[in-house]
Length: 601
Image (cartoon, rainbow, N blue to C red; front, side, top):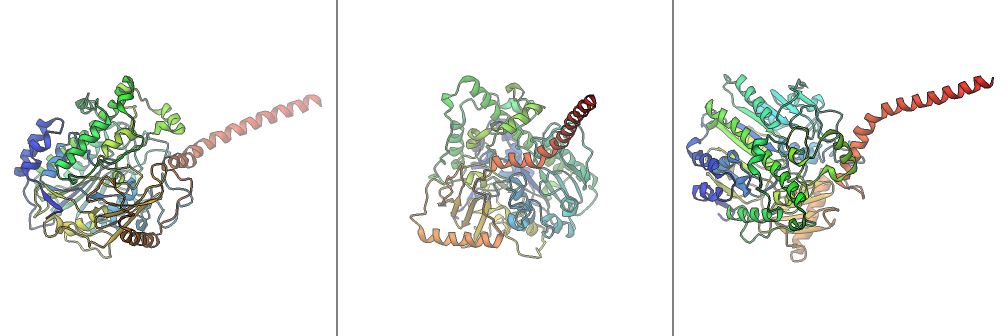
């Protein structure tokens, strides 16, 4: 099988995986135990399902995908499961979550873009409600009706009206942060002025939260608590566990950050190249695949010592946050092993989009707000009250060997790690390099549970691929379209039609073979004109069928975030005290004029 590469212990074992991975001793132990710990799910019942969503992780951030970040829990799942090397999501978080939960294209769910980035001219249109349409059905609702216990913990971001909170979407128990993000240390602290407060809900009601926590630890604690409360129930469970790691602000306990002290002193170019080589060694991309071009990448060698030290610390915090998430995920798996439920549990791990390159400090409005809320002192980065991001330079390494990042339609924005582990009949350590889409997850979970969908879905079940019954789960001539903020793509077989808008792209259509050229370094538009023309027609059909709207001429996603914050949050919050001040000022002038008239009289 050309497209299915099986990597056993000789390839993904300790020697191969850990030669590049920092902290190899702990990982060696975890991976060497993986086969003995794993027993195939019971054939007498439907499996438990744990769906794990990381936030803003780049393609090679996971150790098993070529990264140096210590992720022993995820690496162990990869060693006993399947890595999908050509898996695609949306380049924004809420459209991905909408597709993940429904199996439908994002515009059909009503979440064609997230509220924070949608232009005002689109807001409220059928594909741009920015929350789930009332009529769409979630995978959790289907599993709940089939007898599953269902739980949601973590970031939600698909609507906070009662009809869109987890209880109305098929979850028995839930604790969610309903916004695009929040602080990881203080539960009431917003990460930007995008909402008037942080919205927490437990079982559909406003939650009573502790003043302080660490988000990854708290989410796993809550998940374990829900499972313990229902431990006597015999029916299988579905757990949707959505971490805030590694969404900005990057924050982590100091002991995790310190593991990376000095690890990134060679800079982003060296890291990009190392991850590119490692992804080839692991069989995730072809040996001939070139490293993507990355415009405006700064030269590490030309930066002064203070700047290099500051930027290296930013990446240390990023890595520490990822390792902290992996550590707490390991606690959940340890709990399932202790209770005897691990062997009956299927695990699915993915990131909601590619690496985040935006830095709020680059914008005057963001910088002014952050100055009143956070510090960016180098030695405090990652701690309570501190704020940082990795910015575009390190994002180039997080996405390596791919092009572009979050918000854009290049592979770096859309292609992310996917691991599915512990499926009956699955080959341990397999790598699949065929095109896979986030809408495929819902039909896969329903197939695992033996539940039929009542209506057609955009995606297709991956179960035949996981069990080795087929190489490809999608017909080779089936077209799948995508659009977000004018950045668009259409996938068909190994080909990808793609358009990225300014400032990162040129606004023109290009054609790439992403199976052989995942870095999108060679444009095939001129050499394969027939396929290019046919795919352009396919894309026009996708736009028509999904209600995709053209973008305003001056649209820029980062600027739109600031405009929306100003219009929806900052000005409404400032308007009442401003009106009071104007009334008081007007009254004072009025009183002065009255006194002057009285004196003249």
